[in-house]
Image (tube, rainbow, N blue to C red):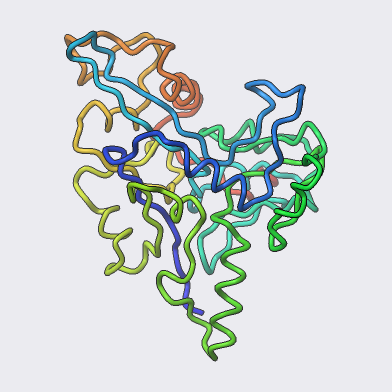
Length: 288
């Protein structure tokens, strides 16, 4: 199979914040209902839709919704660099950053290293209401308490697509035969998925659009999730201005406040590492 680089293009202007992607992701990947002791810090949501606004008052106020999931970083993958168990795997054939719970010891170094806060720790053993266990996806194993998990582009669907390709006598997965659950469930078609190495794919074309951007791109993580918007103030979230401070291109506007959850989420990550220095590789981290 030729090397691919699977990624997403998310049109923020088309996202209406319905949350269908979040529900589809939970069902597809056997994420259990919230435990009674759950809170904002202990919840598990592989993909989360954040609401942001332009910081202005009515009638100039505008809002947008931004789905955030594991950004599937490229060569400098922060979580892989710090994992002592090699529980994080970057597949050279697909570019997908996978998570192997069987190897995870729950140290949560990866959670601290992830600038996108897209990893979640299992504080409780998975429990489903009586009868709901019959709806579990047989292609995805539930994770136990004490391990970290995250988006893996629905690896169960990838394996199924590989099996269908093998049955057809080929190693190549046909475009459209492998589609993550969030992409399939999006009612507005805001999320597109495909091979970024295939210049003819819609995802690759959208990634090269002049209005496309990536979150915290200056950190050098080379994320494979591309966002797109025709609105300047939406594209500015990629730089994550510090909470309470106006962006350099936002002169005259009301500064974004801590009410803006996505800016509040990403701002600390941006200030924690020099924008000009790439993150260390796994070998550099282990051997200095």
